[in-house]
Length: 176
Image 1 (cartoon, rainbow, N blue to C red):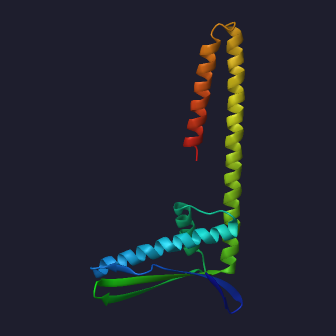
Image 2: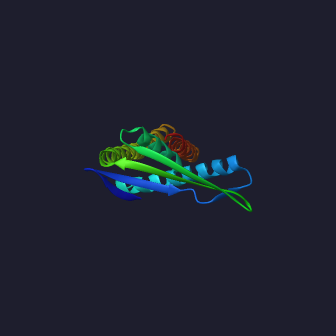
Image 3: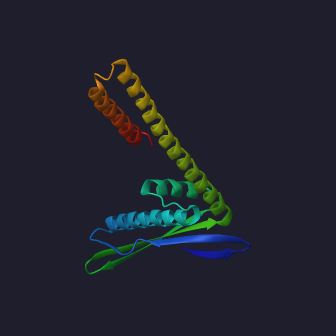
């Protein structure tokens, strides 16, 4: 990644390469080079997101953010492919350059920060809900234990622990 001054506006250029992709078939070599360059660009976007927003994105998140960036005004995406014939097959290389103006980077940094805050609020809500559920379950256990005079205490304890544990596991696994 490098920064270049274009007139008065500062532009950040993300440049990635597929590396050499060798195949016997020319179209297949081009496809492999394009796919490798796209994977490298997604990794570069993830690294840039970590630099700007303090969080590293997974592949799906970085792909989503790359799509958002490309749709923004002023963002240029240039692709340049080279192809040469060698004794051992066709060698293809793809270079992708993504030019990001400063205002797009600022908007993206704000977007990343908002996403991070939203995720932290959601996590805090899930943790609070878990705590409230366990406290409510404990109250229900005590109430049922008193109603039965302690006769079914072991059954109630095992049942409530199983129910609360299963509910907690399901909630943390199924909720995003």
